[in-house]
Structures are given as C-alpha cells and as structure tokens.
Length: 582
Image 1 (cartoon, rainbow, N blue to C red):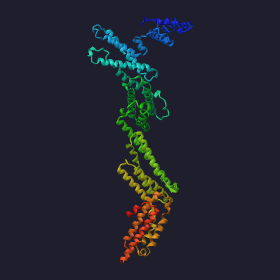
Image 2 (tube, rainbow, N blue to C red):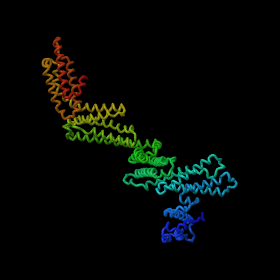
Image 3 (cartoon, rainbow, N blue to C red):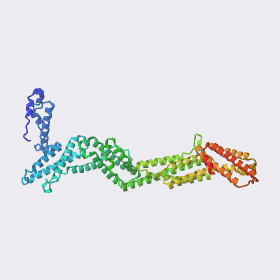
Image 4 (cartoon, rainbow, N blue to C red):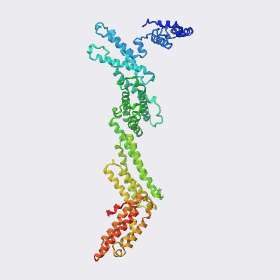
C-alpha cells in the first residue's frame, strides 16, 4: 500500500486529445498537487501522520474521479483504490472495515492455522481493532439524524449485519475455541446506543426545539418541546433514516418504541411532582390527544408503525392521580358555573323587568345555559381523559343545581313580584327543556334520573299551581251549581257559563310557549273534570224517578262532550288521552 504507484496518470498526461491543452495540465501537475495538499507541519517541524494518510486517500480518489470526468479511453486501466483497515475507518467505510476484520479472523482461526501458531499479540491487535470499529459505529449511529450521514449510516448497518452473522457462526463453537472478541454483539450495542441517543435528544429538546414560548408554564413548554422533538424525529426516521436499514430492523417501530418509553419516563417524573391544574390538564391532553393523534397518527408515520403495541404512557396509579385531580377541579368549576347561572336568573326575577320574548312567547335561557355548560364540560373531559364514562361525574352536578333551583323558585313564589306571572311562564320553558335533557341521558344511573325528574316535576307543579289555583278560585261559583237543582233545570246555561269563564281565565296563556300551554291546559282539563265528578258525588241533587235519572245521565254526557270539546279545541287536539285518566 505504501509503495503504490499510478502509471496511468503519466499515460493520460501524454494524451492531449483526451485531457485537454498542455496549459491546463501544467496547472495541475503531480508535483504541484502534491505540494499543495501536503499536511501542515507541526510546530516542531514534523508532519501530522494522520492528516498525511487521509490526504493520500483523497489524492487517490481524486485521480480516479479525474479520469472518469474526462472520459479516459477504455484502454487506460482504472486505478484500484485499496484502503487498509484504518483508512476505511477514517472514511467511514465501516462495512469494508468489518469485512477486513472478518477476513483476518478467518485467516487467523482457519483450520490450516495451528492454534500454537497464533500469537497473543495478533489476537490483542484484533480485539483492539474491533473496539475501534465499535467506536466508529458509535460515532456514526449517534449522528443518525444528520441528513449528510446517510451513506456512513448505511455502511454501519451493513457492518452490524455482517458481524451479527459472524457471531451466529461462532455460536456452535465451545467458549475456549472462540475468539476472545466473539460475540462482538454489534446489534445489541446498536440497540443500546439508540436508547442513549433518544434519551439525549429528549433531554436536549427544551434547548433545541422552538414554538412553545407562548405557553404559560415551564412544564407546558417542556412537554410541548419534547413532543415536537418526537414528532420531528420520527418523521426524519421515516424520510431519511429508514432507508439506511434493512427491513428486519423495523427501524420506524424501534424508534417509536424508544421515544414512547423516553417520553413516558419524563411524564411519570412530572406526574409525581406537585402539578397545578393547568399542567395536569396539559399532560392529560398529551397522553390522550396530541401523542396518539397528532404524532402516532401522522400520515407519513402511521403506516410504518403499530401503535397498539406501545402501551400506556403513564402507570395506572399515576394516571388515576392526574385524572382525579382534573375531575375534582372540573366538578368544582362546573358547580360554580351552575351556581352563577342560577344567581343571575334570581337577580333577573327580582329586578321587576319583563322576561325575554321570542315569537311572542316568554322564554328563559337558564336551562339552555346550564345544558350548554354541562355538555361543553363533558366534551372537554371526554377529550382530555379519553373516557366517556368518567365524564358522567360532570353531569352529576346537575342534581345539586336542580335542588337549588327548586328552593329558589319556592322563595320567589312567596314574594309579590309584579312580573311573577310572566317570570313563571318563562321558567316553564326552562323546566320543560331540563326534563327533556334528563330523559335523553341514557347512561345516567336510574336512581339519579328518577330523582332529578321528580324535582323537575315539582318545579313544573309549582308553576302550574300558581296559574291553576287562581283559575279554580274564579270558577268556584260555577262549580257550586254543578249537580244541583239549578244545574238540572238549566244544564246548558250552567256549563256554558263555566266554559266562558274558563276561556276568559285562559287568555293570558297566549304569551306562554305552545308546548308549555298544552301541558298546563291538559292539567287544567283533568282538574276541571275531577271537580265535576266530585260535585256529582256529593249527591246534592235528589232524583225522584227513572225519568229524572235518565235526564241527569243525558246532561252528564252532554256536559262531558262540551267540556272535552272545549279543551281539545284549546289544546289543538292535544292531550286528549289525559281526559280518560279522570
């Protein structure tokens, strides 16, 4: 190697047609090139041996490229550039360096080489050379995310495969027959090194990744930058690193598992510290939203990995602790929201201002505000925690709100607010909406559902009683005449007067939402018919014979038809079935 000459160079320099003018060649003469590329002398005047060797290699490669660039004739032989082991290491030709070691090992341990011929120095030299190979493997692998490092990385992977195959060949040999450097364990060395590389890259993410400056806490910034580092690195693995490995490495899955483990370790450390609620929510969001969706489900990455094998980022105990902290905070927050909503409604009741109207009907936004608050909070909990069943704890705050609502309405009914009638009309709308919402909750425990519907029914009953009691008070004189001699003599007129008075009393219902009007009128229908029957059963009318009994029965049927017809017309053919409950 040291005495290698390059006869083809002098041959080509004689060919003007091939290489160009003499002037061009003279500017690149061998002597000049040699003088320009000599390594610098050290202060004591000695040349740097390592730089000298490297320049020799480069000069040889330059000659070869020079000949190819100028299309030298086929008659001119190519100059073989043969590098020794150390030169291959210097150029990061690690696969070639590995092949040279394997060839030396083959020669040293061949059957033709007697054991007593191998010297200890030779074996020591081989072991040191393998240590040098592993050192250069470490240098290349730790720089895997450098796009300019792809060719050395491919060579390193090839070298690892070669050494693994050689290790397997030595497995059958007895321990005392194997070389002291076998097994080399390059694959295990590689896998351990990748763990360290990933760990270091995660640790440096806070210094090297940007884009988290607007986040409010240092923990949020740290977690966000780690996440961005994982996202960017895994994309780099897919785009650049993957092509340097053979398929059996499954390198995308390998890196994903390593980053998952490293991220998991950091999150567990954070979860066991005293986190405030904001940081707790942010970490849960990364566990259930950002990491599984924004990172693992990236279009470029998803097809190269199996995310189902990764497991959870936190232990069950740590995750449960974070979830409990978050849920407790959210329950208190929702409870506060609901209390504030009711307080504002109470203030509006006491302000003597008329409730809001829509399409001519009084309405209240209380129930809709409460429903929207609950649904938004449930949606957030489901998103942050990735669990719908645990979000039911948020819905359970509705029970306390309904109890407070019932108490507030009862206190309001005791007062003498001038807009009490309009306020109750608006509240009937909210009560109806609350009932419908509760009935739609399929996953609500049966006991809670029944208890809440009972409270809502009491709320509606309180409002109905305000309106119906005043109506019955106005109808009292008409009720007294039923099934009396006066009624028997003038049934048509008595019922007519009753219905006329009913119609007058129900005129204010025009500003009540139609669906609420139907419920109120249906209840009034039942109560009027019940009062009619009660008066009949008092037996204040003495019927002397069968003719009078038949006449009374006829009047009864006529009254029933007229009263039912009135309510059916009033309710626009609704709630007819409730008549039969009487």
